Image (cartoon, rainbow, N blue to C red; front, side, top):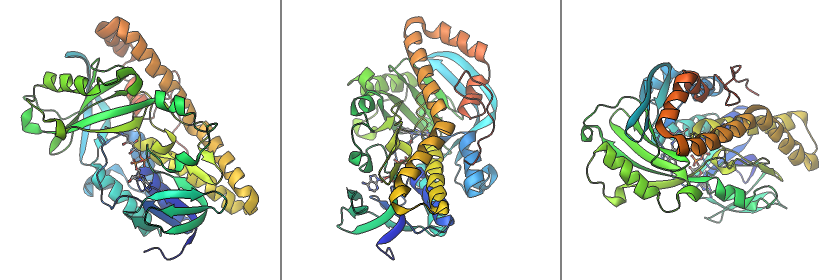
Length: 396
Ligand SMILES: Cc1cc2nc3c(=O)[nH]c(=O)nc-3n(C[C@H](O)[C@H](O)[C@H](O)COP(=O)(O)OP(=O)(O)OC[C@H]3O[C@@H](n4cnc5c(N)ncnc54)[C@H](O)[C@@H]3O)c2cc1C
């Protein structure tokens, strides 16, 4: 049970974004309350792939190395190879020094939340944020409880309630919808496939502006298809079925297929309003080419926390604190994330426009010319901006 009704920071949502912010802010001595509508541990539809840049963040922020995470069974599987197909034709299959890691979200999110709670964050589970009164900085939950805070972090996912309190000039709803995607997934028994899969496989051309995937876990495989809603209309399930039949796994009953929206280029330029800062999916922060969102959820939460700590340390007057924190958060996002989002979206548009016309051979040639650069970009060693080498991420 929460010990108070007044906090320095209230965080809506205990996914990777919310728990990362909770861990940093409570660890810095702030009074933090995390509110999540689900009771943890909880499932989240996701393929669970994390890249080297995420593992670096986990080391830097939480002091957990890849070795620790493997020992604690937080990392469930690791792969040092990947394959890309165009329909059923192999475009490239490469070994890589930089591993792809796979986590189960049920385990990963609970692990991060426990870290935040151990750092001192209080938590309410099973009761969502429903209403926000900007005049009084007051949050009301569906269960009727009320709390106030100096700052609110909206980390409540793609269907964010906190985002609804933003005006149109901060959230362009048309642009948001045009760059919103949906992912469909099922788990497959490893024995259902003739071929053994121990690495990620990406397949293009089943959907427009999106792709299909087959990712390994220690016990199962995850098959999925995701793409921009406006480009696929009602075709996504049909495309997913075509992908599954190419895998030759037999009949899949419709109820086993689960779907969830994800950001795919609809990142907000000003994810701050009053004393609310949005982080993660709530702000549209996922890679606009691949849909990778866990890293961007955690990194944006780190930057939002940094902005809050900056204002608190300076002792800014209460009436100026919200504006100053918002400005600092946007400045940090511009410095650390927006270049990647902008160039990844340009790459997305280039690839999906171009390959609709020139298909497999062109993709093969491009991947040969680029060599290991695409995979280094995904892992954060290169920028999406012309695939230039990047300096390792600074904390802020
Ligand atoms: C099919 C699919 C596959 C994906 N695969 C990958 C992948 O392999 N790798 C990757 O990096 N990303 C992947 N993503 C994206 C990734 O899942 C998200 O980007 C990531 O979960 C975002 O984290 P978050 O903390 O912002 O939000 P979430 O993880 O969605 O957490 C939000 C939390 O807020 C809570 N909440 C919601 N409403 C309220 C409310 N009103 N009040 C309080 N709490 C609330 C929810 O219960 C939830 O716990 C995938 C997405 C989909 C749909």
